[in-house]
Length: 126
Image: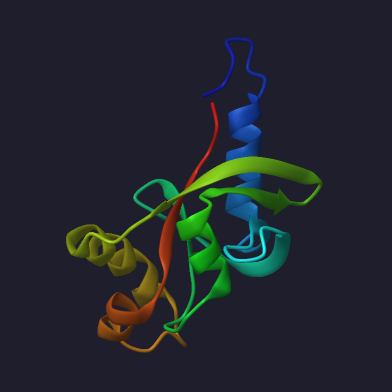
C-alpha cells in the first residue's frame, strides 16, 4: 500500500527490494550451536507471497528455521527481522511449486521438488 500522498510505505519498499533480488542472504540461528549462520539461498514469489526454497536436497538453513523460525533477511542495504513459516501441507506445496518450478529451466521435475525441496514462506513483520 502507498500512503495517501503517494509516498512508498516501508512495506512497499521491502516488497520492491524483494521483487528485485532473487538471490538473498539470510542469517538463521544454528539448531545445535545456537550461533548465527549467514548463508545464501533463493527467494521466489508465488501467489503474491515470498518464499525460500532450493533444489531438492537437505539444507542446513531449513533445519535451522524449523528449530528457530525467526531469522534475518539481508536485502541490499536492509537487514530485516522476519519469520519463516515452513510449508509441509502437500496441497499447499503443490500450489506454490506449481508456480515456481515451471519457470526454472534447470529445475528438474515437479515430483522431485515436491518430494525433496525445502519450502518456507517469508512472513514480513507489520
